Image (cartoon, rainbow, N blue to C red; front, side, top):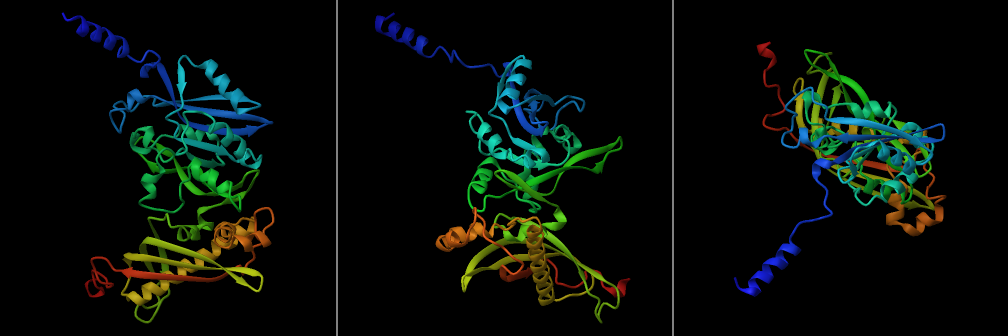
Length: 392
């Protein structure tokens, strides 16, 4: 054999002999979710380890009795100390690159620990800013132990993949670490965390299932919790976001001469939401004009109704919801629509004149005008009942 060729083969064997410092996938634990509680001046850390071997090749584990995840618990004066305790209990190295969600307890938010926790997690080399963040008033461990319905893989749960269901019904926008940091680091220093609760909605032939549901928001500052607002209180929030993909409302129609005295119900799907918020300086006092545009697709109704009637009814209902949610925010001293930030971005000089600690004073009449424009699409059918009254 040619000596030069032999030397080249030896050199290649040395250089391409493998990654000596790599770790075998089967010799590592993968942390998938983390929950944080704060009691008696100590952090309580809950770490969810996931078994990728049982779900890596399928959206559904082959064995319904298989354990997809386990929850570990440690408590200490600092988060890092709690992590060290977990490390000591593990048989293998812990990998952070698959961390998908964080859950904060109500006590953590009240204690003003969000900034400290974010500072800790963003210093881990393997953690990512796409990690989803939630608040809860239920026990953190119970929230993390909840399995998806129909025995789906735990990687498809609402906590780990909120965008999947958000595309179909965009009520409360999910938030990740990146958005949390941006929101809490800019005026008015508030962030809206989705509130996770445990509910029994679905049932099987064997038992009832407890599922996670998003049932409101927690409004958090770097050092405190302003309060929680439930879904009923924040219906207007979906109309003030350009991230809203698809949502819907149902409205009671007032009886009229054509329908008799019987109350009717109108259901519509709303899409293509566009929002513009404009600050207005009125003799030194700042007001806000809100303009919302959307497309309405009629999905269900009783009786016969015209497109102008549908348009007027929807516009009135959306306007009412926007105003109600704003007032609910004022009740807990929260700028739920982040109007202070809107002024900061569009009229920074004026914001600097009137702000105090990043906030501007908001009152019941700070929103001057709410203008809603709806384009009605009746879908495949006209706005007349498919089966007429004469067939009843």
